[in-house]
Image (cartoon, rainbow, N blue to C red):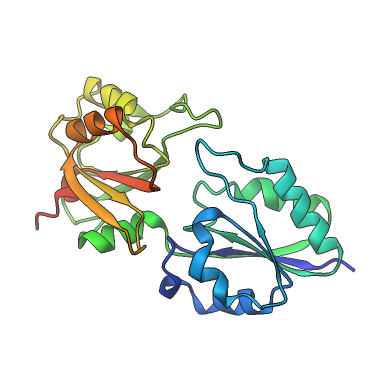
Length: 241
């Protein structure tokens, strides 16, 4: 008899940001397949008898292939196990969720998706700023800064991303942000547009840097650093009321 898979969104890393439902699923799981950014104290909620399997992907590091992760999920569930697939942030945001749900559906395995706190929301909260504001920032847009090869994705709507009246959040964009910035400037985004560079959001070593798009692009061109980060830019990013 097939088991069941719970896609549990762990938020940005602080275990206190887990939902009650996420904690309940971790406590009941026979196996937990976790991302790198979902490890650490969050795994303390798992049962001592549970199998803990690291399947995380990090830029520049050797990582499991996606088909291997999907196969592991199916294999565990086919034994009748209660499986938690622990994903950082919110599982539905640039988390390769669909590849895994498709594999489960093809194998006839049931699943649920438990939402979590996106790192963009946690970064804005840590900086004490909103993501939207009436009359000033009526639109929030999320974009990935890298494709499967690590390059800046093709087909980006640069005109939308250069809209100064939007709050734009770039996920996984440290390495490609200098190239993106040049395209934004060419499309009319002012170089002085405020930016927030949020590293290790909600972790003890969290660091928030308020800067401008042009200054952040120059910094990342010289050194991207090793910490996970999210980039916010737009009128609200400087924190001015």
